[in-house]
Figure 1: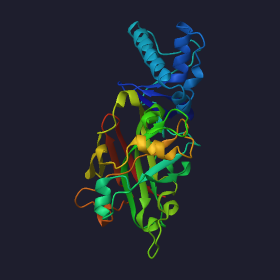
Figure 2: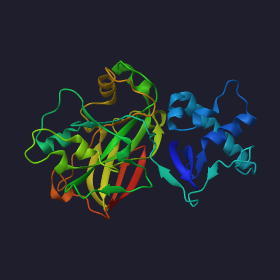
Figure 3: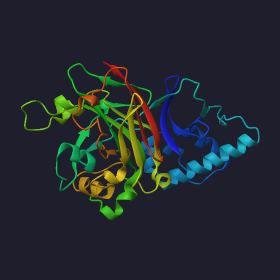
Figure 4: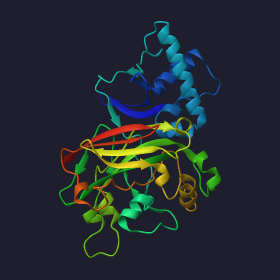
Length: 321
């Protein structure tokens, strides 16, 4: 199950991509399903966007499976995919569909730094004693149909592949043993930043805002896969290429801190809410692409591809602002 935000003819839809590469608007499809299969107290508004879906928990996932079975039965009977209201809910890729980031404005975005053994080793740094994070804001996000932007003020743009978890259940003071109850699913993040601005010459501190906060410098997507389908996220194979050349490869067991520790750490003082994103950190670079190497610099025209096992892949071009 691949949950997406997409736009057709400037109209926003929340739904999913099928194995046949068709796009279903789940809100409209749910209303059609409930019209034929009424369920007392059922609320189709859970499918208005990703956050509402996650707030419905496993019930949302189960209802989606029933909707898909319903659509499959109707199609085999020669039915045309149009709801009783006359509204369409099945779209084809050739209909100029634009995928958007599966993150809603207002979501909190937390990024793990120093959370990869291989990445720490190539920097000569020790393992941290506790999770170390910075935040991003919505202005820095792009979806799968948009480019990452290079800004003239930075001279060392670099990109990293990361596994990202999406929160599905609100909570605070969450015990590590209960952490996965608050996870909805997983997606892919491409974290672009400027090393020269992140670590200014002569400075003794890290400038996260200038290094990682510029417009259109983090790609998220192309979809969210529910945790029930991903299973244990350790290990998941990960690979990053730029222009077809491999820059990173490994798996999620390289992470120093795992989701239960991270969620317990953050929720000591922060209320996590449906739709919040935790980007878990990058891997070290392959030989020739280690941290700080000139070979890691991005340039306009580059095409970045990131893939994570059981989630899929994301392909993003790089453009000058």
